[in-house]
Image 1 (cartoon, rainbow, N blue to C red):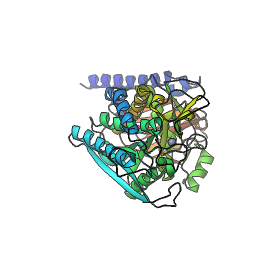
Image 2 (image 1 turned 180 degrees about the vertical axis):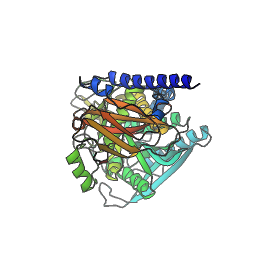
Image 3 (image 1 turned 120 degrees about the vertical axis):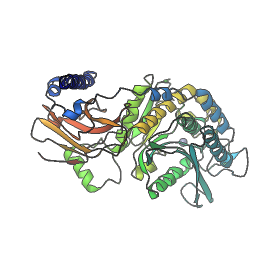
Length: 482
Ligand SMILES: [Zn+2]
């Protein structure tokens, strides 16, 4: 009996070691790394009883492929049909203007909810913006509509996907001219509605919000109001995936590419306190803010679940000198990123529909590739589902190991039902992505990586579920000696 048990333990221990090495072997490790791993401290007895998590979750694979180009096209055509969706356009018509568009969006969320037995809570957020405010010349109600797929384990943890309902032409104050906004941003809104359709087939541990925001072109009002509400109500916002223009594949520079898309993320919160900023300067990590970890997460889940896509990290808050609805969430201290096409076409953005010197201007339906928009929606869905099934992230992650050939990590596990263990991620300080990881089974909340000099790498810890879904990587927030 005891002999048999011993054999089993040894076997599991071996597979644990093998999987850790396979993980390392998968990437190009610096030459010194083989030796470093071999010297990694032996797992504890509890650790030996647990094997490494699966590399992917088949449910997420299925969901990532589920968004339909046909349904996205139909929704974009419906949105264009409202003539203009300018924030200050008419609200009293059933067929034209922002009012009709907002009511359609709400009805669409309610229909989706009816099909899943009322699984979505559908809310309207109305905020009056007074005449004389930035880009508003008459009293205007800015109306957001959002649906909440309530989390079954951590209902107050929120992951948000957003798109914008409003549109504009050349003059940002022009609220009457035809303004299809097919790509900017009917594409992002249609993707968000489609994500609600496919995600509502499942239940998730945390809450998922699918949000249609208004007032984007006027002064990012809708995002500001929803961020303020989240803050006032004490939502624990894990991350915001803002989709703004996810359908154009033909760049103004002539490049045509239906694989590449961009993930923009800020380096660090604007409101970070002085102590945190000083720590970052002294210990490193100025490219490792929470929004950046969220961006890396989307990059990784895209590569895992949508290998036909080619995600590009951009180490910037947004495009050069321009804005979007993730920024008000960043301003409120929430991790938030912008997802969008790589090759923009400026002739199709914020333009009166016209032909000038043989060039066609206007954000018309011909500029949207529906298959591409569906794939980018899939990239959102993969990240949302994976986060939705992941355990709560670890807290109090601390790093030690100065002046010795070892890196030491400590953390506290979040409250979880489904925790299989943690992954310690690491990379060279100049690498854009986490390149390597070590698996630490549940029950162990500290780890020493021997043979590795802490100076040369950045580290982070993620919690992993039994089905292989991971929390966001938590960068160490403090350091310890010895
Ligand atoms: Zn725009």
